[in-house]
Amino acid sequence: MHPDDVRQKYLDFFRKQQHAILPSAPMVPENDPTTLFTGSGMQPMITYLLGEAHPKGKRIADSQRCFRSQDIEEVGDNRHTTYFEMLGNWSLGDYFKQEQLNWVFTFLTRELELDPQKLYVTVFSGSEKLNISHDQESVEIWQKLFAAAGCSTGVVKNPDTEGMAKDGRIFFFNEKKNWWSRAGVPDNMPVGEPGGPDSEVFYDFGAELALHEDSSFAKLPCHVNCDCGRFLEICNSVFMQFQKQADGSFTELSQKNVDFGGGLERLAAATINNPDVFATQLFTPIISKIESISGVTYDADEKSRYAFRVIADHIRAAVMLASDGVLPANKEQGYFVRRLLRRAIRYAHDLGIKQPFLTELVPVVAAIYAKAYPQVTEQQEKITTAFALEQQKFQKVLEKGLRHFSTLKKVDGESAFQLYETYGFPFELTQELARERGLDIAADDFNKARADHAAASRTASAGKFRGGLQDTSEIATRYHTATHLLHAALRKLLGTTVQQKGSNITGKRLRFDFSHDRSLTESEISQLLSQINEWVAADLPVSKKIQKKEVALKSGALAFFGEQYPDEVSVYTIGSEKDWVSRELCGGPHVTHTAEIGKLQFMKQQAVAAGVRRIYLQVESH
Image (spheres, rainbow, N blue to C red):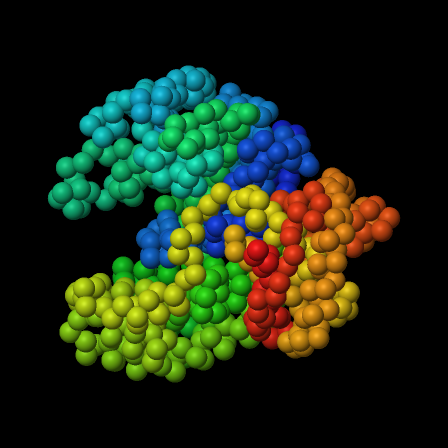
């Protein structure tokens, strides 16, 4: 089945179950400084899972574009990708386990026509430490569903010792496997984070695929979670009903939620009964193009197949991130695009590709997503230009860098820094090359200053909780509202050609990117601050309305990410209904009156890209 059909069948199915269908949120969270990327389908839903009313109601579904930077080095096997789409549906205090599991089984077996005999499930075995019992309700629901389909219904309580067991269909696992939160297991969850037990569905590609060649691995019993190659997790229903407290305990949320995630790539693989997600039509056009460029076939050998997967994954992810405005850079999100592209170039080198090739793959990716995400095609020229420049920079020094690396007897801080500074090797690439070639990584004698320099270059995400709880602290709320005033003041001062291009908020400052072709003069900065602080001192009201998107736009509300908003939106107005200074589509959080923000002061400005400026402001300290 074509992945476009899988996606559409899913959305149509849940539309019939009275779910509002939302467009994908941006992959760079607009109001969450705690994480660099949207790494899960539920990330944009956090405030609603915690109890805030969603403008579209209690039943929501979508296909969310996601990127997980921590999975970059996992790519190369048959199932890991950095960019992926998560088909999701949510019950925000509405239906629960009975409806959810029934719908999941119906969708998989009827809409996707998967053989129910090939489906196996896991449920939560309970935890004395968490004071949460095993999920007997889900077991009984699954047993009825499988029995009606003529399947076995056996329950395996100890999979690590019993393995598949006779008639085994439903497997118990503890919180290491069957508990879901963005931080993982309960011990890793920050205070306030929601989570809960889950029930996963696995597809069986056949016992002959159980790759028990390693003698130590062969001693382990095979079961759905053994990663032997036979089974692939294709979806997961999370019963998100708990919230972590300061003392480490868990209390029930004000509402019982369902948070479902089904990986589009994996579901598509199941529909063609092939455990290799790179055999789906989300990747085969890219792989065919790489074969044409390199003269090497995908299945030539395991090393070639690994390189093909890395290149195909990384170019797809880089293009999709670039379509959301993330271009190669030295810091933050842009660093990961640079790292993806340079890693792809390095693996292309292993396939004998020495000439520039990235620009040939951009239109291939755009064509794959022409139906679902036409904005990729619309930005194809801009993306191609940026990638061509990036390849030009790195291609010139790659061979010299690899030759230099081949002379090293060990990798220490000095050599790692030289590879970065002279040849543009990301620090992780140096580590990866060292591991491949069996070199010692002499961490003990790293030059600290230079190691810190390399570390700072590779990411500004240190200390950020991956997929962290959206920051709704008082200071973050004040800064977020201040970005609206800054936007309005810039448009008043410089003209309506000014458009927001991004923002980021921490507890210490706000950062705002906007379209403009030059730096602001001292006089303009003075006028800008004067206007913003005049609005702050006026203590203007900040109000929220839920409106149809067309109505909101007609009323003058600004929206520069139009295709990514649903048809019903939250509109925040600063000032009176008839005499307002700012009106924007936004997801919050906001103060109730501008005086709560406090007086703002200028920190600095800088260029971000051609035609894009960045400005930093902070609240004056007293």
